[in-house]
Length: 346
Length: 219
Image 1 (tube, rainbow over the protein chains, first blue to last red):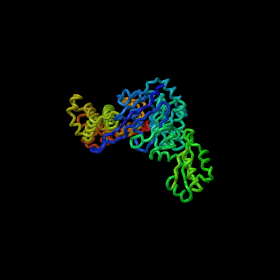
Image 2: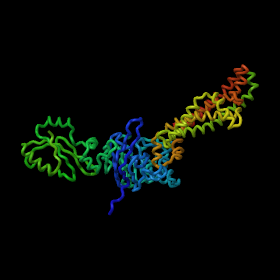
Image 3: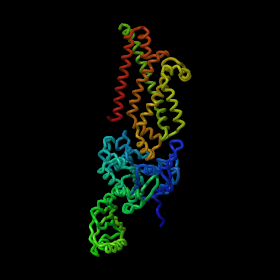
Image 4: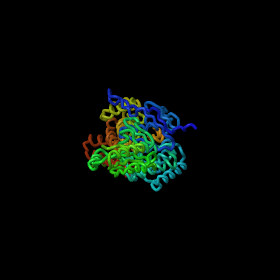
């Protein structure tokens, strides 16, 4: 069976802004990015401010024009479509924003109705769909309220209702929780999960917060200076980041590896040997590792570490202080190396 | 005081003429200002119909015409007024000239009010497939309605000011009345009566403008 067409595919896409000052070099916001997103994915794109994430997501619904490459939505290249032909394409792509971007002159219900008006749906149809959507986001009682009467979390839920009103297959979330407090962030992320599960909407999540990726995404791409420097299943990137920037993001939510100052403290406290072991539920059997260590009477204590869980799969790092003679420890560590990654702390 | 009493019929006629001139110029100049202001807003760099050439022309035009003192503007455009209205004097000539001047003054106010609309809201409208015309009528104008109403209230006062010059070109209104019967006849009471009426007009319009704007802003 041939692989299904990805819902979104970027092929060698670049976006170069001409220099604003004469003589200055052009600014490359997106540098030869290729990415493929399947229907049903929740695809996280993480990076620091200025990495190009917001630009990248705006290339997908062509709010901004790419300067090179192809942007395929459901197999159709939309990168060069004239503005008029883009409008129906955009109706199939919902978008939510960090600042919500609701129309203050309209009630909640009429905000949600907006895309339906653009789509030319009749009044009865609109009213029905608006009621459905407000029900889904739990704001049926706020239909007549104006955006400035709502809290941030409520505004974003209206944003989600509006983005989904025209039943798009794809939702773009541009820092959708960055203006919200942790509690509200959690609520909105749970709502987005439901959007993906119950409606099968594919979601592209742009964020600089790793916990958003951890909660929501199934796949992740790490962006730096307009390029994607690492990508993969969220579990793989979290449990074993390959790039320094990725590792920094991972360390904001995954505590497991001691930092250098913490290592110094450990070193000062323990005179024996200290090793860090990596654990991944699918590849490393903890019982066997500890079995190998204790077999020859090596005493050990866990001095640092943590086991985390992504998508129901645990992983983490444990740092152990070992007591015993060097020869026995070396032999035991050799056997453990066959099971997992061992890093000795000097 | 006796002078004023005998002049009362003329005062009412003059008051009515002022309202007529100001009302019509507000309508014509206000509409023209809205169009030019929208033009400025939409064609500026980064906007939805960004067009350097059009923006440049509009911008220079507005900047050139706006600072010309009205009484000089009146004389300067008289040939154009004659061509369009058929005469260079009288109320209708005045209305054309004031509307023209008001158009450019209002254009800047409209542009500035539209700039208060968050770009993100326009982006949100674009993201659901809305085109420029729809964005103008469903996003830009409704979102900027409160400030726009205040802008039009502000321009009303400027129109009353400009209309007072009508007397110089054979037009009517309270300005002409005050010049003719107050200033030239050395009767300050008559002038004050005209001033009082103008103050009342402005107060009433400002009050209504504030109320409408508050309603639009729901504050």
